[in-house]
Length: 258
Image (cartoon, rainbow, N blue to C red; front, side, top):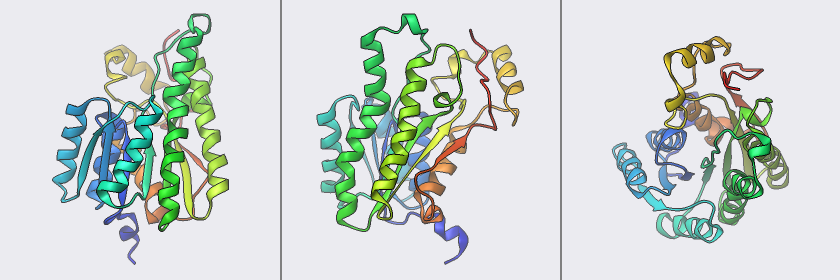
């Protein structure tokens, strides 16, 4: 097999949460371009339908499923529906997540618990629902989208950073338990220009962030999608239990806010 062919996902079925926009959309489209059939899950039906339509333009099958990842019953139904409608499940990308910057003393218990449910518990529940389907067949790959906030201390990120740090550790735990049948990895993503970050990116803020990033630019969703493709395709077949940093070389915060 030619080296580039190892990045192909011909006829694999990939489930991607948060696929309506940003990183999730870029990953779903990259997988579709490489031949996978993709299930696009998110809360906005219009957004996931648009992603699915773009995926079909590559000649791939695509299914849009509205899902709130903070609802365990909806996650379990998402896994069942993927297998029922597409016949198998080979790849899971737990991408949905997020939380606004919030100072420690402003983070009340409901906010803390919701942050963990959105960023950590959702990945736990959906992975637990999907793994049996992978194990019934040829195994598979799970990819968790973590964050540089899980290892770099920065003001206002106690909830989000702690949840992402836990997600990174959970990745290693699950990988150890299910190797070699299922590979489980994570991407610790730095500042990527998405609809969540873009409102903060004045010219001055952009310049400050780029100056504090060794690669001197903010990341793109395609940067993350390419790393996801490596880890979820046969090209990454000897990689499991790893948290790969895709962050422009950042070793300290490049978040220029107090």
